[in-house]
Length: 461
Image (cartoon, rainbow, N blue to C red; front, side, top):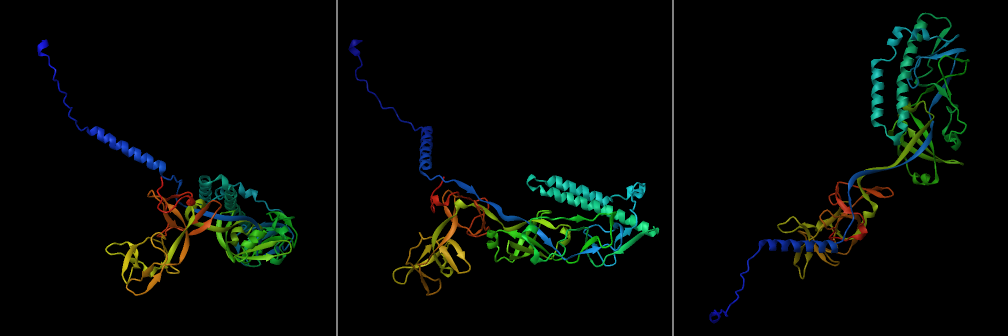
């Protein structure tokens, strides 16, 4: 068919169809590119999560205890036995001890079935079990001194039980008319102690650094069924609730506490905390701090030396790193010039325009000083020399004064917002700042770890 060859073939353009998948892919691709570029160009700031915390600044000391105490001598020769347990309060004419010509034998009654039944009461047994469980559950390796507190509490229960048994046996011997046994009563009201150390008559102005360091210190315990001579120490009576603890201070602490009249004290023995009056006496060889108490004497009546901690700072609030705190400068104006704009609740000021007209400028209030009545405004929102008009008044105020605030940059919203902070106390690395401030931080806020590397309204990733 050479004569009928087709030589006029025409090519038609293919009709283009919209592919939704390609469009979606393109949008996603553009979004990813923009996100990567924003991330690459944005400032990367290390953040810190604000949490509630506390800072405790304390210093440990060993102090010498001074009390109003009197050593009572035995009134006869013989073997002494006591009625009252140490640390108990006795009244005038109360039986305190007995003197016998021979040692008393308490073993006979202790072996009887009745004695076994009267050993520890159910209340005493329950108390020991409860204290043991509490100690076991709350023990921490860094508080080993709690072991001694637990030991002392158990010994007090046991000694009280033993003293009650001994007192009952002594009373039975006296009632039976046992020969050579004489009882003696307390000479005055007070707390009884069965030890002497020669410091009973020590005056405050006689205390030396060597005494506080326990140099050459000797303590004599007074035991039951020991032989005494007339005039030998029989017991000691503490007759006043007021007492003093003397500590030795170094030069730095003497300066720090120079104007202090009271101080918070924690006793290491039982972890009790209280307040004490405080005075410093400068002697030839040492600076001594005198802590005075008018309570708790009976708790430590058998101790001549006590380990304590002076709690110089104990603040709780929001804990933030020191590196996050920076300073920012603000314009300050009287609070009376702040008003609300139009139909909104936005705070602002009335700025005088040309002539007598005034325009509303929205501003952010960063801090209100209740003492001076001034508010702190961002310097980017106004300029020096602007004349402000007081609402509902003809009074004016020209912006000129500046002041700085300490604060941090809050980055919760992806950009930096300055938040003022009120510092309560500090440690080497952290501040404790006041919580509950309308313009400050709240728990779990995220702030810039280094406040010097960021500016107001700067985008952060």
